[in-house]
Image 1: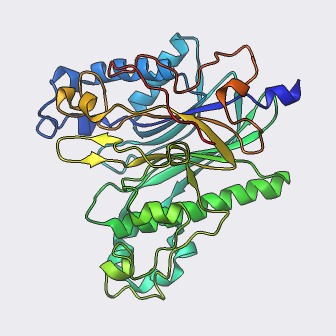
Image 2: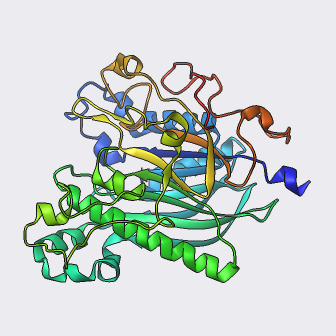
Length: 370
């Protein structure tokens, strides 16, 4: 029945797969064998992991033309073809990488897409910043993007907005990342508002995000609905004394613009690590949502597993970032436990079921949202 079909869960995988230029930095990743850093070895592991996790929606960061092509070929060869619903690969930067959204061909049709270049929205969302020359120049110089696509589920005609985003990487400029997060959220809301106006109905939003920011950051506070005042240490007014309140006021998203984090919703907190190298270990990556219910998430490896080969990347994991996997139902669905899901003839695998991961350890059963 139509009611039964609408209960089919959505499995989303978000992953910063590490671009080739970063993988070539042998001194940075001195602990990783040279062969394991080669593109061929990394792509083999990457393809195996994506196939094992079997997502309906694949949200990629640091993806390049070659890696995007090869992921599509591997999915096709495994008879699980995916479509590129949206992508933005930036030729202006040396790594020539970007972000992309892929969706399962058999399940979704793509009906719209857009690229959000954060710097293009400064005049709209931070019009007073014009007088803050150094900050403005730095913000507008950054070639960071998000892509958003609207897909429709073939069986139910339900719409879903899906987005992949990556903020600027450098930890010494948190105010730039905060401004980018604000510009991203505002631009994404305009996109979804336009879709709502055109169709007469709202659609949920799913975001795979490398925020390059920890859960204690102003970026995370902003996107999850908290106010970031000018007195905050990472607010542009605090970092740049000449940026006054007229330039960058109190930063806050309204209720419609703010997100929930899937991992925090299910586990009660973010994972301890999503990025694990010799010089940094912490959480930078998230799966964010609006209008969806996170039913479960795949647990991430413990520290002792990650340290087996010193850090990431390694012979067991092809990126310095871990893949995040979550399973969603529509927020209106009365489904709270895996046992409530009907037999729909699709693989009945909760994301937390025990299986071998790319780093060789069995996954543990995770807590479900209640």
